[in-house]
Image (cartoon, rainbow, N blue to C red; front, top):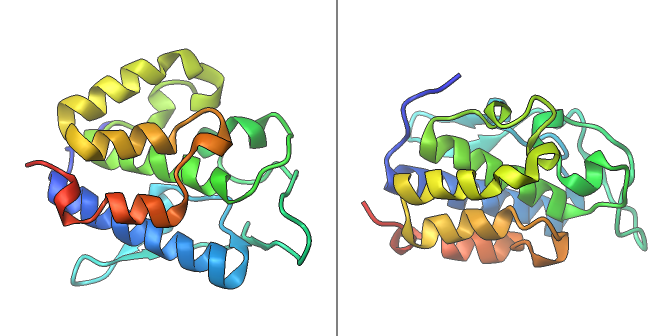
Length: 171
């Protein structure tokens, strides 16, 4: 279902905080969330983002750089996870791109395909056009780079956080 889109500066702030929290999880704790979606994000009284529901989270053991288990909400899974391939923190970044899309446009990703965008990759240009129309500029570029089909081309958490600073969007 559709909700009203959120103002560009607010979406950018939320995205910056989400990516910063993911950076902390990935780099400091070697942890993957594996079920990032709007329902697993809370806002405190000051509008600060808190990532919650770590029920599917896992810790990557030393020397292990990827997982293969297919857990999480289907609509937010990256193609590599959905296909049963090895995945790493870039799976969380795919989901972060989808969360930003939903916040920016007010449209649920499930509108593209009940299985998730990975099952409807031909609709990526439509998604990118909606983000461009809603916010454009660097914000749209961040979403494009987070939703790169090839995980090696996706933004890392620190890159996304830097690009989503207050100067990254237009009102």
